[in-house]
Amino acid sequence: MQFSLNKKEKQVISALYTLESSSVSLLSKQTLINRTTLYPILEKLLQKGLITKLELENTTIYEPISQSDFRDWIKNKEKEAKNNINSLSSWLKEQKNQDKGSLLSEIKYFDGKEGLKALYADTWRENSGKEILAITDYKQAYNLMGRDHWREYFKMRVKKGVSVKNLLPPSKEGKEDIEESKEYLREMKFIKIFEDLGIEINIYDNKIAIASFDPEHPNGVLIRNRKIAEAFKNIFEFLWKKN
Image (cartoon, rainbow, N blue to C red; front, side):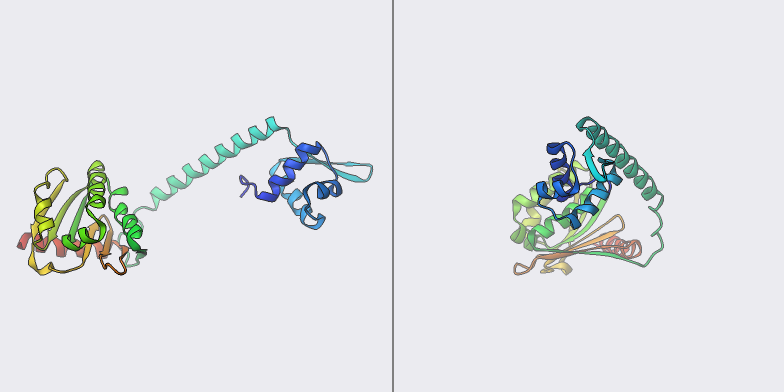
């Protein structure tokens, strides 16, 4: 990467600023980098435009560019990086709908409580103003993650304007939360078939997030597949209307 400098490249430039100009042999003594290793480093710095060389009495002398020019180099590289990012972002938008009819899936795995927190963050991070269809074992969710985690998650989801339709088995925790449904942009329905499920399924956008509240090994999986997500949405809506 032309914008970055590794440790040895910085070491060489630092030595050149100290020496002002130097032969390879002197630079090797100053940096304690052997000459064989030094030559390719100098070549890379020449390609990046950060040093210059001149032949003087059959000896190659290397000099650093001025610190003022170095600052200009950094600014130019910053502009190049921003242009590249903008170009990639534009390209990515054009690719957005390429997976509409695909059966291929992107699958990510999450381990432990911290992994589950990262999994849940995905449900609101790029889902602003949308809806989550959730099937939740509230009791085990609260037992594993704790009330503080869920309060923080609910607030972040609401901040992003993400609403929830939630199917859940009857539980003390669920009945307490149903009183705050409006505040948390949530509709809830109790359904006994999901009793002691031990997991949560979140369906949103073109994704399905499945969290396991196993106290010994909490974990989760995120599946990104439009066809599968649409199938799960249809199953959820059927159960929602029937209940």
